[in-house]
Length: 77
Image 1: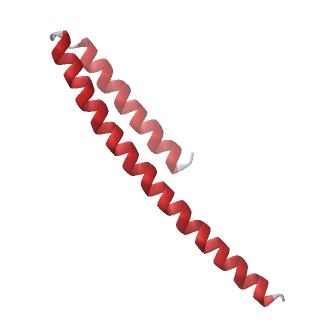
Image 2 (image 1 turned 45 degrees about the vertical axis):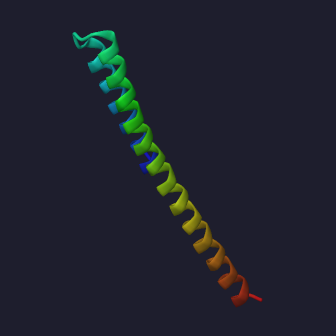
Image 3 (image 1 turned 180 degrees about the vertical axis):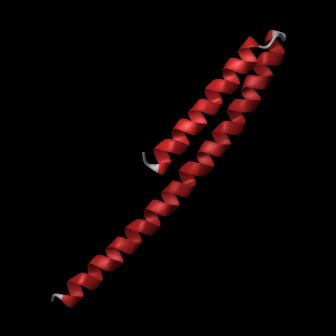
């Protein structure tokens, strides 16, 4: 399993667990809604940060591959 898939599955599991825990807790609907919203914002930020990190890593990898391809092309030209 790729690391990105594992991270996504982990975050999904955490989110599902948090929602289930909050929904099963004996509190008022408004408190539950506020908790859900707070956790959703928290996990949204975490996910956005991870996506940004993976985009940066993908761009770096692309640059490295392009550079290596140019080196190979020069050697065999």
